[in-house]
Image (cartoon, rainbow, N blue to C red; front, side, top):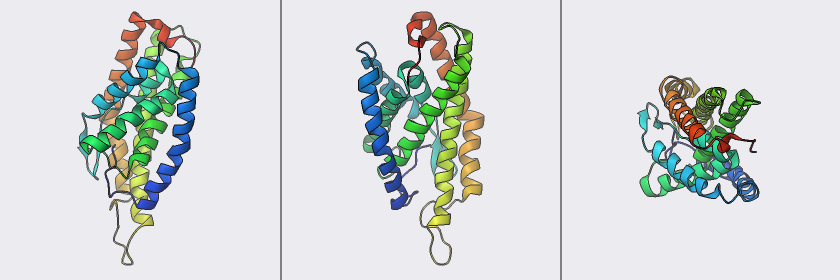
Length: 226
């Protein structure tokens, strides 16, 4: 799902960078306000977990990759705003040190994986798990459903961003200047792979982690976080 350099126009990259600045600002304030001392180390652990799981990626036709992210699990444990910060840190390190995702596309990658993914997944989780005990099996199902929804919605966003490029930016004779694949190719390429393969990896990792943590320390799932 990482967008490489050169696949989005400078204008598109600039727009997503501008969009993410207020999101990061709100996230920073929310984390300072809502995270208690006991939870602070889990922000770093969440960033490390997301970094590691995203390194196991598989190329997808169209110039991107498919992989699990772990953002919904982090959102369930310490809140979606904290997950936004954690996944952002992982994405920035990957782009700067490992070339996994473009430096110019950091804003777009963070929008998809650090904002859309954890929030979409977290709210699906809260909708399904609402009113259930902290140790309930419904929480495990809700976590898996949220993880699946989050990564698939994020993949859809990436596919749309790719697919719009040849429509918006092309030469006089119609040759694409950036991503050459239209919506009819880019959206299925991104979405189908995550619906059929990578989404299920995200489901398994998230559900098993929640099940394990329920047995070890169910306090993680007591009360809501925003």
